[in-house]
Amino acid sequence: MTLLHAVPIIIGRCKLNCLHCKATQHMATPEDLPQAIAETRDKALRELSDVDSPEALERWRVTYLGRRSGLTRLLRQISALAPEARRQVGLLGNQARSLLEERLARREQELKASVLSHLGELERLDVTLPGRPAVVGRLHPTIRMVREICDAFVAMGFQVVEGPEVEWDRYNFEMLNIPKGHAARDMWSTLWVDYQDENGDHPMLLRTHTSPMQVRVMENTQPPIRVVVPGKCYRYEATDATHEWHYYQIEGLAVDEGITFAHLKGTLYEFARRVFGAERQVRFRCDYFPFVEPGVEMAIDCFLCQGKGCRVCKGTGWIEILGAGMVHPKVLEGVGYDPRRYTGFAFGIGPERVAMLKYGIEDIRLFYSNDLRFLGQF
Ligand code: FA5
Image (cartoon, rainbow, N blue to C red):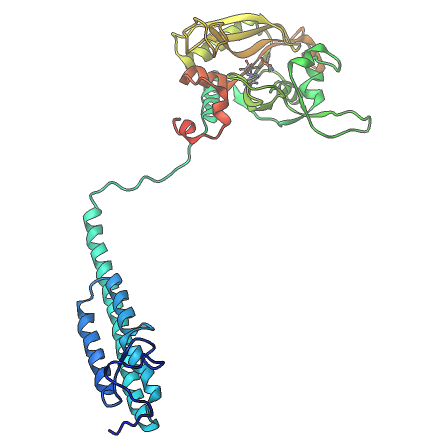
């Protein structure tokens, strides 16, 4: 093979440190170029058989096929050859490069396959390990409490019904013997809906208690009635350890001939016994609600201080959990019942307060602060 060249090319160190050697100072003479390419190719193939990791393979690729690799440098020199020699040596160079690329791809596949089979072995070893626990949701503690309380009343013959959270003034107040301007409206700090009727009034609100459902149920049913109504309520008030601005209530209503205050007390004692156990203390005290007469509040001795007085019970030793009383004759009349024939009792329980007592939760605000460390305990 006659290899002609216009520029002197020296094997070993390039004395010129010129454009052709790209300052690498390593050049081959035209006669040596085919042999240099073959030697580089063979050396690369020998080393490839020792490559045993993806990292080593990448190093090999950079060394033999990278832009600054020996082979690339040799191939660059081909352009300086005479046309005939350029064609022959170029063919040789391209074949060498293709061969190395093909072997590189093959080795890559082999390494991948061996990593996978290694993983397979590891998996076979892993079968004795416990599986990863699946992250599953659970019921919110309030909902658990609501269900538990409802179950206690269902066992005593009550039905469960539900009603709207956005309510009319008429049901939340007026039909419950709390007309406009009545001082008792202040007891229920109200969130009003921004809606005006034709008289310029704001008759719509977020219900402040579940008592409006007493009226809705009585309007649509005839005695005997025994219902419990769980649902969300809203009040525009400052929060503290026992007050939230949104919380649940469970309303209870029983109407029939001959219902007395003794039935009310007996039912609520039974509820307290089922939910808290027999050892917990229960206290009834007179209270005022315009829609009952007489009215009471029921409290349970504080779980934290056992009745001595602390921050949670505000020093009283008791935590109020419900308001109750005998349905006011005016309310019965309002729905068309004859109060001389029918009597009834009603109550409104705060399930978060019940859960606080039952599980020793010190702050009601924990229920709705979305802290999974708290919620995950139930
Ligand atoms: C009422 O809401 C009356 N509707 C209850 C009632 C029903 C009386 C039927 C008579 C007959 P009161 O405002 O006291 O009453 O609330 C009742 C219960 O709801 C309280 O005992 C308490 O457990 C709970 N509760 C009231 N306000 C809040 C609040 N801001 N945060 C958490 N729970 C509350």
